[in-house]
Structure formats: structure tokens, C-alpha cells
Picture 1 (cartoon, rainbow, N blue to C red):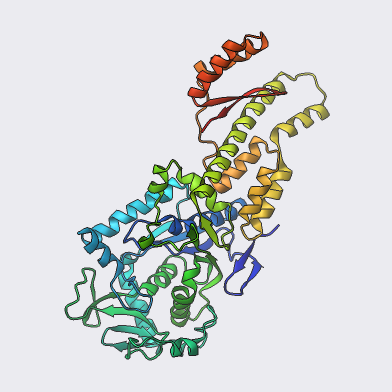
Picture 2: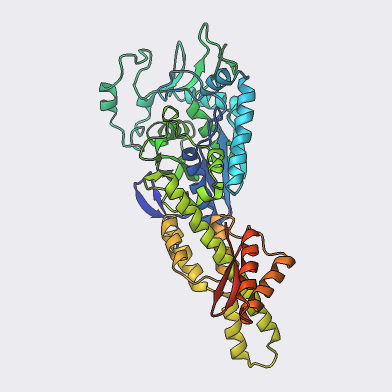
Length: 473
């Protein structure tokens, strides 16, 4: 089954065909590193990690670029307000460079704790300032810009396709413009490519351009970085649904105006999550970090499990009750992995002892050990259907899966299903003695050894096929 993805560009699910399967060009909008990423921010990176894993499982080689916004992202999408890095620096009494470095490190710590595959390259906006200027020069030469007292703006009226991507009603936007609308802007949808430092404005990150000090607008960095590192057209551009009406619309306009080619073939956007039915907000005190979850007894991978239980396009509501259920589901899967390991180790020993069976019997036994090609095929069918992780999870819950199948699950989802301690020799001996005691009717000794194993983190599971150990937590 070929991979199908929902393309925001067309508003429908389409078959995905990369320009080059050995070099699938993916750009992911990254964090603005002025504060700690909360769990809502991290959802998108989990979903796009799944995208990369599915592409790899399908035999493609993704080349993904992720950016860090460390300058130019104002508190308003309307090119007004304070730079978020400047605000973070004042809040924490640090330099903007220190704030950026600190939150970059925290983001990567969270990223790694979620077992997310590293992008091919991570790019900082401040490393592309000269390239920003060059792109603005190109746009100016082509007649797409104009200068005001506070910056250089892109004239959206010169780009006829501007409203198409987000299905914008520009007349409605114009009618609804606030009283405080910048009177120097020609159109309400025009956006800043470069902002000039104003008299009395304290802005530590600044560069000279056109004889004045200033800094880039937020939108241009993604166009410049994707152009410099990947080139047009991209195969896939990822982000949140909040990027559609402004950020990604502006990226398309400036990129296609500058270079005269389509910016990207597929645009993927994930939906928001709410917490206990409410928008994530500092004022509500629900901007939980992964550290906050850890303090409540949850692993980052429990949260990842919760995220992947839902579809990237769906609206999600987070609660600690649902996170507890996801934690239990993940523990159940780890125990199924542990059980598969024990059973197949026993089967392998049996196979080693088979010396005189005929070829057909041996082939059947080998196929039993190698496992479930049917499961793997069905599993990938679900994921190739627009990354349908909820249906893939349901298939896992309702399938008998061999160790090979579980390795495929872990390869795609990276949930740490094989990361658990196995019994040491001392504990294996307790298990042997406990089973021996049960066979001899010495249930007092069997129960005492069972309790000691529980203290060690192992629960004994007795089945018709034998006794097996399971994890308690």
C-alpha cells in the first residue's frame, strides 16, 4: 500500500510520491526558544517523528530540517509587540543569547527523552541573517516590497495567490482590521520581512541593513533556511494548524515570489490539544512540561503513548486519567514483549534440538519463530493510511505478535518497549524454586518467593504453556 497523506494544500488525502525516495525533503517548523516547551508544543514533534519513521519503514530516506527561532518572533502575528526572546531575557534577567541557548538545550533534552529521531540538520535563525537580507533584496528587485518607518514589508497585493492556501477572505480581514492598524501598511495582510529598531527601543539582537539597525521578521527565516538547506520544491512541510493562516501563508508568498517555483508539494498540519477541556494557558496554570509529568509518576514515553493514541488531525483533550490509561497500555505492551521474548527463547532452544525432522516440518517451525508477516503488513497499511496511529494501536491490541512484530512496532513508534530490566541469575533461581515449590505443593514457600519477586519488580504469570515473568511497573 502506498503512503497517503492529508495535504492542506488541496484539503484532501493524496498519495505521496517524493521527488527522490533517497532524499525526501522535509522541513519542520521548530520552537521559539524563549520558554520551556509545554506538552502541547511537543505533540507536533511526536507526530512528525512518526511521519519520518513511516517514510523509513516504507524504504525512503527522509532528509529533515528543523529550525530554532531565536530572533524575530514578535508577541503578535501582526508584526507588533515585543520580540519573544527579548521578553524572555527580561523575565529571567539574562541576555537574549543566554535565554536562547538555555531553552535550546531544554528542548533537545525533552526531544531526546521522547526517543525522537534527530533531524538531518537543526538550524538557528540567527545563523541565516545574511541570507535573509539576500532574499529581501531579491524580493525588492522583483517589486514585492515597500519600506515604512518601522520596517520592510511584503506587498501581498502583488502576489495574486496569497489568499489561496489558507482560504483567506481578505475583504473580511480588511473590514475587521483593528483601530490600531499600522497606517503605513498598504494592505492588512502585508507582513514584515525586516523590522527596524525604533528610537528608545531596547533590542539586543540587531544587524545593520540598508543603513539602519534591525532584525528579521519571523516568517522569512523558514523560507530562507528551507531554501538554503533543501531547495524547492520541498516534499513535505510540517507544522501546527495555527501556522496555516499567517506563518505558512507568508512563507509560500515570499518563497514563490522570490524564486518563481512552487515551495512545497505536501503541507501537513497537526491539531491542538486542550487540557481538561481548556486551552493551554499560563494564566490557567496548565502549561505542563515533561518534568511536571515526571513528578506525577509518568515517563515522557507514557505521554508519547498518549499522543500517538490519537490522530494528528484530530482534536485531543489531555487529562491525567487518560495519561494513566496510556501508561498502563504501554506497560501491557512491554509485558507482551517480555512474554514474546521468553516464549521465543524457549522455541529457539526447541529448534536447536531438532535434528531429524523432515524439511517441511522444519520450515513450519522456522516460520512460527520468525513470525507475523501478516501483522506487519496490516500494521503498515494502517500507518500508510494518513499516519493512522490509533488504528495501528487497535491492531496491536487485538493481534498475536511475535518478537519480530514487536521489533517493527518499536522501530516505528519508539516507545521504549524493549527497555526493561530482565531477571538476574538470583531472581531466575527464585523463579525456578518457586515453580518447583508449586509443583511439590509447598504453597507457603511458593508464595514467599512470589512476594520477594514482586519486591524485585517481577510478577509471575502462570499459564498452560508454563510460568513466565512480567513487569510490575
